[in-house]
Image (cartoon, rainbow, N blue to C red; front, side):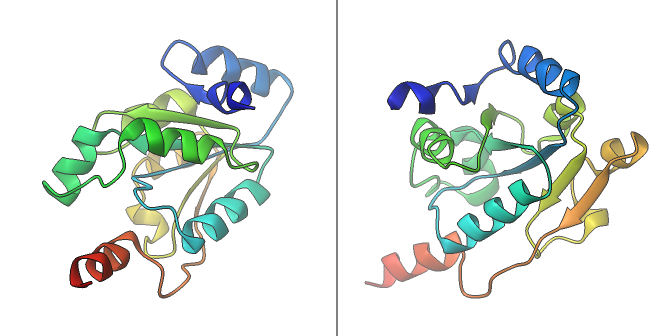
Length: 161
C-alpha cells in the first residue's frame, strides 16, 4: 500500500516520462498547487473537483522553505515529506511534486497542463501560470471556495486553545 503512495511522488526526472505517457494516451491533465499544510474538508472538495475536470490530477506542493517564506517562521506545521505523502494517498490525486520556488511557474512550464486550477479565492487572471496554459490553448479555472475552511483559521484556533 505504501508503495502505491510513494509511486505517486514525482521529481524532475520521473515526471517528464509520466507526462509523455499521459499525453500519448490523450489524457486531459489538470494541475493545481499549494502548501497543503493542514489538509481539511475544503482541500478535499477542491481536489476532488479539480480531478473531475480531467483524467489526471497533478498537485504541486510548496517545499518547507517556500512555505516558510510565504507564511512565516511558524509554518509549515507538517514537513514536506508528510504533506507529499498525505496528498499522494488521496485516490483522486495521480501525482504530486515538490517545488522550491515561491510560485509553481517553472513547474507549470514543464507540466503544460490542459487545465490549471486554484481555489475560489483566486480569480483566473491572478493564477500563476495562467499565461502559459492559455497560450497553449488550455483552460484556467477558479474552483468553488468552501467558506469556513482554511489552514490559517485552524492554525489560529490551535494557538487560541
